[in-house]
Structures are given as structure tokens and as C-alpha cells.
Length: 392
Image 1 (tube, rainbow, N blue to C red):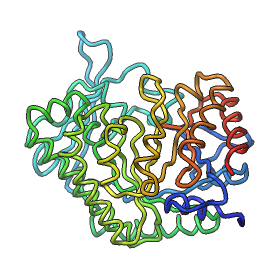
Image 2: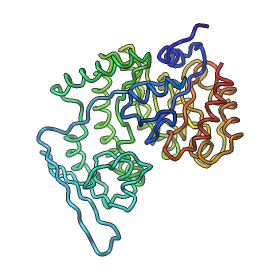
Image 3: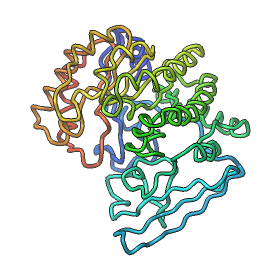
């Protein structure tokens, strides 16, 4: 079989067709390639580094996140004797009232392992994983807060579309030059709800006030639909949606079917009508949902973890049987247990097992969730060596 470009290889995997070999993607988070003398400053330079090392790559682009033009923001810091940390209070003046975030400025707010939070003085973002365990007060508690949120988490406005299209065209030109896939990022999905309510708050909302959760998800979904509509009219080839916090680690299968599956199906159908492939990210908690995820109809499951949160090995043969010919997989290499703490033999065996069980068609390897600056270099080297042995 002739050698394919990285773009052609990933498209073959996404379409469940035979590729020249199983691809390997790295998902960097604050990590830099050791084989480059100078750090990569953007995703194009990172893709160039991956390709020159014989790995696969893609470029991503997503619609902008902008507030309603009438929104004004301000931030202050409060100190109280009963709390060990100061609290950052971010207020958003909206036409429906003041939307407020209260986040403790903990000692680890600026951390070398977390590539965000470089601002000085520190600034609170509307959507941020770091906010959740540091909330003094979650910003969404009732319907009034949702009315304010509509001015913040909103669909892309018509005035913002021309600049977005120019950005997509520029990124698409780079993707063509490099021979890599162009991926569109539709929205944060339920991850955004977790960032705004906290895990406990959102689960309590689902049990005690399901109508409030449904209204919040509708606000998020409205932006997602608009984003997909914009992306289908661009050179993007794969549209992805986050679902990190939608697995059964957090929700029961019944809750998934009620709150998340219908919205995911609608987005998938909308993208397919526009001729685009669809990817969905859920690393853990997917096993009890194999049937529901197949029913959703998307094409690629991104960052599927071969281990459960407790470190036990998932039944990948069951995954292959349920999704064979229907949902391709990008992932299947565990980062926090196998790459960070495992032996060289552990790394090799996981690569071999994932390829043997999930491959060869419909499979691309990628460390889950990401490659960090603390991920041992030797583990990555062993992973790449093992991949080269079995990728055919």
C-alpha cells in the first residue's frame, strides 16, 4: 500500500478504512518535543515537529468565545480572616444583572504543569477547570443566573463571522501545506456546565432541579448548534465535541440518555448533513454507554482510556465488538498510570494489547488525556518504539 499523508491516514481511520499504518497522535498540554532545540510556539510549529519525527498531527480551529457587547467585566480581590487564601471576585455586568464568580487564589494557581494562568495580576476566566475546586461560590444557582449567562455563553454573532472565516482559511492553508487534518472544535459541551456549577452542584441540580439543568444544557447546546452550522461551511473535515464530564464516572446511564444523548445526536446529524465527520471526547466512564454512544452516530471516539479511573484494565474486546465498523478510536494509551508510573514493559504491553484488541482498522493511538511536561521522556520513547513495531 502506498504511503499516505497524515491527513489521509487519519481520514482513513475515521472512516473505518484501511490505512497504510496505525497513526500515533500526541496531545500536548504544556509539553515540548525533546528533539527540537527551540520550543514550539504554536500548533503549526508543534505539528511540524510531530511530522518531522514520523508521528501524525492535526490542526484545530474553533469559533470565538465573545460576550454580548453590553457586558462589562471587573475583578477584585477579597481577604477574610477565616480563609487561608484571598478570593478573586469576577463580576460580569449583563443586561439581566450581575453574574459573579468567586474563586480562591490558592498557592498553586500558577503552576509549571498548568500552561494557563500566566496573567499578572491573576485573572479569573469564565470557563476553567481550575475554578471548580477553588470556588467559594459557584456562579449558577437559579434561573436568574441562567438569564445572565445567556449574555456570556452565547452563539457566535454575525459580526464575528468574517474574522472567524479568515482564521479558518489561514489555518486550512497551513493544514494543506503540512498534509494534516483540519479539525473544528464545536463547543465545550457539559464540561462548560461543570466549570460553571462545580461537579457536586451540577449533580445535585440533576437530581433536585432537573428542569434547571435542562435549561442550562439548552443554553450550551444553542451555541454548539451555531458553531456546527458555521464549521460545516468551512474546509474543516472533522468536527469534535467535548464530553470529558459526560461519562458514567459522573452520571448514570439513565441520566446520560435523558440529558446528553439527544443533544449529541442532533449535533452529529447536523454535521453529517454538512458532509463532515464527527468526533466525541470521553476518556473514562464509557463502558456502560457503548450502546448509547453507537446510537449517537458519531464517527471517532477521541481519547478513549484503556484503564478505568482506579487503574483496572477495561474490556477493550467488548468495545471493539460493540463499535466495529461504526466508531473509530483515537487513544488507547493511558498517561497517568502507564506512561507516568509504569515500567518500560508496562508501556510496551499496553501498546501491543491496544493494537491487538482494537486494531488494525479504525484505530489511532494517542496518550490519554494528554502528554504533560512531567511525562517521562523514556516512557514516550518506549511507546513510540513499540508503536513502530506493531503499527503495520
